[in-house]
Length: 320
Image 1 (tube, rainbow, N blue to C red):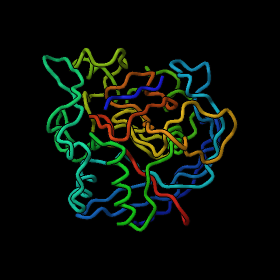
Image 2 (cartoon, rainbow, N blue to C red):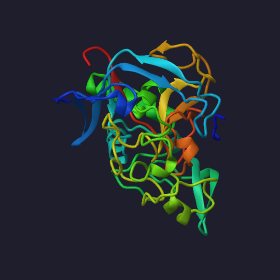
Image 3 (cartoon, rainbow, N blue to C red):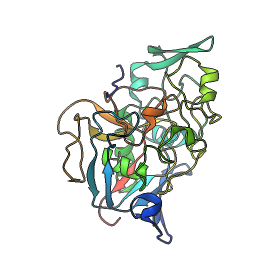
């Protein structure tokens, strides 16, 4: 069931193809990189994702499958660039410092945070002073910037669009899953078994269990070395050279949540036309195995922000 929480430099490289035997279908590796200048010697690196077809959602036999994951063919008809990582503290700082932007949490003076006492945690719905500048745990500049609402994420995209002269946006849900799978038809980027994911992701693992034994209902059986967020690029990249598409932090998508998918094949779907709930994908440092699957869908109100809500961006439009 969908969980709804409270409250420029272009570098050419060779194109290679992964065989159908390896990945279930041919997948082109990124052919170019794009670096957007955020000012103050801070850049944001993206890779070009080629167009293609894939099966979005999950088969009925997949362990942990939800009813809103009906598998169907999706065509991504145009290439786009996607951020190699989620937006970091350093990158968001460049935006906030130049624009003077205040996040939803900063404007309200509070956010939903983690209250940790005696090795146990609980969600505190209104934690005064909690924001990306002061989350529930320590972060460094190369960590993904947490406590982001959907509104904050789109404000960053609008600013960077004007600054770069390119169309910067949040990915659609279809773009996100296509990029996360990178040709893999399995439940996880590494295969069908959650037990085989060591080295791939920062999720609800044994280090979190040691730190917060009452966190989620189930833990991965491996230790990823991080109880909370990890620096970006700490784990393996997928076949599209993207990091942390699974784990570390949930990532906002453009789409409104519209219930189940249509069963018919679709081209460049953009989500429901109406509704308030927005989609997040990918799981986080506190997410159990079933909810870290590539097909799993999560949603929340656009002004909600938590210690595991972040975003990454795409660049779309002509000339890509």
